[in-house]
Amino acid sequence: MRAVDAEALATGALDEEGGRKLSEGVRGAKARTATPGQTKSEDDSLMQRVVERSNMVQAYKRVLRNKGSAGVDGMTVEDLGTWLKTHWHSVRATLLAGTYMPRAVRRVDIPKPQGGVRTLGVPTVVDRLIQQALHQVLQPIYEPTFSASSFGFRPGRSALDAVRQAQTYVQGGRHWVVDLDLEKFFDRVDHDVLMARVARQVQDREVLKLIRRFLQAGVMAEGLEQARTQGTPQGGPLSPLLSNILLSDLDRRLERRGLAFCRYADDCNIYVGSKRSGERVMRSTRAYLEKALRLRINEAKSAVARPGTRKFLGYRVAVRLKQAHIRIAPESIRRLMDRVRDIVREGRGWSLARTIQVLNPLLRGWATYFRLSLQQGRMRKLDGWVRRRLRCLLWRQWKRPRTRARKLTAMGLGPERAWKSSVNGRGPWWNAEASHLKQALPNAYFTGLGLISIRDTVGRLQRIS
Picture 1 (cartoon, helix red, strand yellow):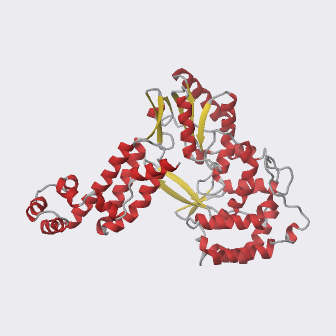
Picture 2: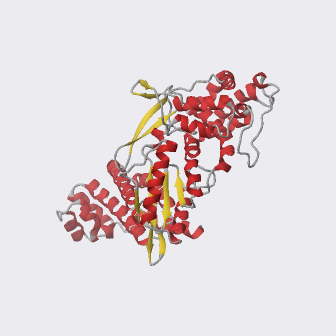
Picture 3: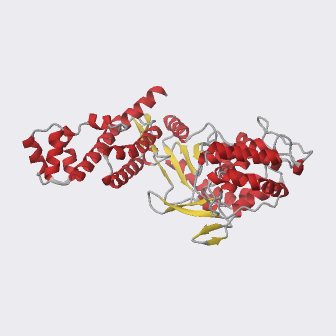
């Protein structure tokens, strides 16, 4: 089903039950829209704003745009429009009555680059729709209460803004960082602690009950549903906002102490002037997190150190000649190289053009994110390394000496040199950097096939920013 058709069906369903006039379930009730600067819900009409037609249509469009896989019920986003046309009336009624029960989330384990797994919880499409509708109503209430030093999952803010702010702190003389890593944050969130903070701004009992039910929804893994008593599963639209609500208390405490910090979700760096000061901040912050928020610091991944030795959102901020420089963390470079290797390995049976087509979105996205770095030499080396990988791929595909000699001759090498090169007995990686293959497959050859240059992409983005 095309998205426009599904949207028309969903809009029709919402028109029928909750359209231009509120339906009998909320007849006579006033549905308010959040006003600028509003930071508190003072009456019990919040759920009416959640199920209001324009809010649900906006949520529906967002769910369609985000796509995502099916939950435990197998329903896809393409099926949602048709399902809403039949079932929206009853779903809306249960939301207003406070009896809606979310389904279990589907557990998905994603391997982490540094080892271990990140557990995601994929809600059903219907639950994602409702969470998104809740998010749209709650975010304007909480957004004015958040700290200026909080950058994650907020409109108009990004990870790159946090990195720039970190550079400003280091440039200002704060040459030590308290690098905090919260241990399994999304898995360890205490529901009571979180709900107490949600309730500071929201008084609508039905909304509070619904949020708690989303938190307590079970996890389906290998056909078995497991109860959940703590944590807010990554994968739902509501979880990022809830994480900011919980950690906002940490932000305010750091602000009251006059500390310079940047927080992106559960990744928090505090910048101080000395190691002794950093150790003192680490001790007090650890005690606060454990006592007030019931969270733990991952001792193995947290430290008081020089900023140039710690990774923050993929970058490092290093001091050189009294200037703070934004650099790409070595771990981020290794991760890119590992992904390129995987793609090239998968592409051994593909044409070179197809391999480049698969590589380009990765290279473009990586260059776009790391455009803050001025390491042109590093970018140039990465471009050369990618081309060497592709030359290595072709050398493997050509396999036999006769084939290699024919290909090299066709690409401009003399017959004698082409034959000697094809039987040199060296491995593919050595040949990929040898003069004969670089002459036969120069940089311009890959440019002609459309290969993205990391260096050129970064340079272009820096010029227009």
